[in-house]
Amino acid sequence: MTTRIDSDILASLAAHSVELIATLQHPSGAYPASPTFSAYTGYSWFRDGAFIADAMSAANEVDSASRFFDWCETILIDRRAQIEAIEQAEAAGTPLDNAQMLATRFTFDGHEGNDEWWDFQTDGYGTWVWAVVTHARRHDFTPARWGEGIELSVRYLLATWQRPCFDWWEEYEAERHVSTLGCVIAGLNAAADSGVLSSEMEQQARGAAAEALELIQTQGVRDGHLVKWLHSEAVDGSLAALISPLAVVDGTSPLGTATAARIDAELSVDGGVHRYIGDTFYGGGQWPLLSCMLGLAFAAGGDSAKARQQLEWAAHTVTPQRFLPEQVDDHLLDATRVPEWLERWGTVATPLLWSHAMYVRLAVELGEYTPPAWGESTSLAAESHHGNEREIV
Ligand code: BGC
Image (cartoon, rainbow, N blue to C red; front, side, top):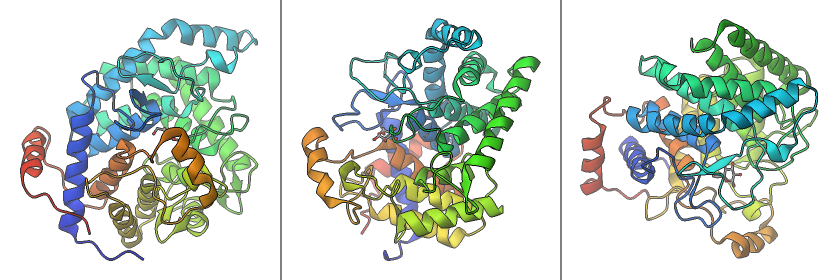
């Protein structure tokens, strides 16, 4: 087990993480996944970005989060014709193929880019809607500013949510993934509650969310816990997010506690969470962002002591440059698979903004980081940059 870390050090890393994310946010509002990692450079993901924006919102970085949501909305508005074509083909019973669906990631200026990617993934279109509505509610304003983007996302999800697609890890395209469905449910319910939809679309959103939830409950549960995809037996670290922050599953319910316990038992080693058994990406190491998501799930289940241990584990992964990586290699599922990735893409993505974001989100949740009030944050970020730098040991 890791040694205990004092609260002031945990808080300092959270403040630093907020500052890092704010510094790296592109003027367009896009959050880069990682500024330096070969395969990610120049791109922003709806999935990563939505969770990053949620963390920035929770840290009272209201403008930063809003600007990311503006970026999302612009991308959707620019693809209105594509969404309408997808909708019409679906309604006519002649659905378009996966290559014609919306992309997973975009360049900072809002284009698909020229690099091949595992593109059809619906989760991000639900997650950003959940994040933007949560943001507006948290800071007590209306999400109407993003009404057009929310509506287009709902229309896209209504036409596509039933289809198998790549999961959070951009794998297993032929399956229907429980984490993906969870993101869709969170997004559709948030949209339905947002007040920006017509009453007809609001009903459709609620109906599809209820149907997807029923699907998870009947085909996505095994031995009392959620599973990686419909009818599978395994768990996936991403399932913790359905408990918190997405709140699709109540953290104190039997399903919530059993899912967190199963992830802990099957995928966590000392608090460091693997994505899933059989992961070979860079040897299948432990992901700080998943450790924080499991921490959020523990907190939602009422176990803040275990949640804090998760935060500490994540803090221990920080590099001397104070970057949080995508994964660490302290415990690998298959060490023989490391060299091929090093050769293909170089060293592990570091910093990964999503890792910093989940760290911040959990630190705020646990009261280990009390963000400055909205509007005061810039001066605090500047202060922590010039002095008070602390090494995590
Ligand atoms: C992960 C995705 C993530 C992307 C960018 C990939 O390796 O599997 O979940 O969105 O990196 O961070």
